[in-house]
Structure formats: C-alpha cells, structure tokens
Image (cartoon, rainbow, N blue to C red; front, side, top):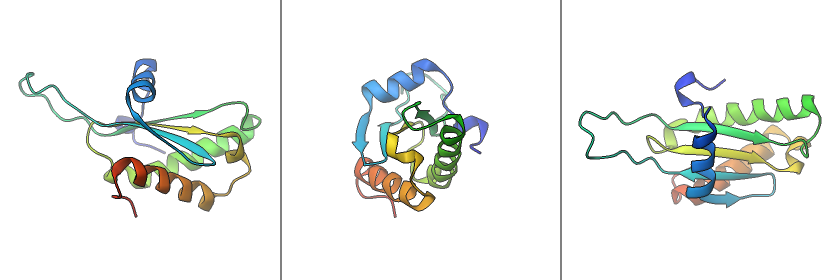
Length: 123
C-alpha cells in the first residue's frame, strides 16, 4: 500500500501528469511522469513528496484481475518512490496484457519505463 501522502487522488493531478508530463511505453504498461516543480516566488513553500496514481481499465480484465494488477503496481511503485524527484506526479496505466503478466514482468517493464524517463537513474 502506498502511504497517503504519496497517492494521486484528484482528477486534475492525473490530467496534469498525463497531458503535461513525459511518457514511456512498454508492452505491459505506460508510465507518465510530470517532474515536480514548485513556485520559487511563494515564500516558505515545502517540496511535496512524489505522488503516484494508477489507471487499470476493463480491457485488462474483470474486477478481480484489475484489483490484483493495481495491487502489484502499487507495491512496485512504493519500492521505487525514493528514485522519483520530489513533487513529481506519476501515472501508471496498465495495458491489456498486464492482467496475464507476472510480478517480475511488471517490475521489468516499470523499471525500463522509469529508467527511460529519469535518464538512467533506475536499477
């Protein structure tokens, strides 16, 4: 489970990450990353932690399969939060093949996508 401060909840945050962020696609998932940027003109502004959200459509499978994919992805992203820049927004969108994929395959695709987006900073 992701800590509360690391969860994307608002529709606007998802839209910002998807529309204004960079994207890296893999066979099982697509990762959208909007690097964190705070306003330097606002005094005393703290840098927020990185936040992540997940999109798993009905094309992935039934409710049980979608929930299992979301849980796997949450677990994988939680382990990689320290690699993400502070204040960044990450949206992980599962593609239809993710429902049949194992934990290792999802981890491999997530690492490859993050490595591409972060410029080689991931395992």
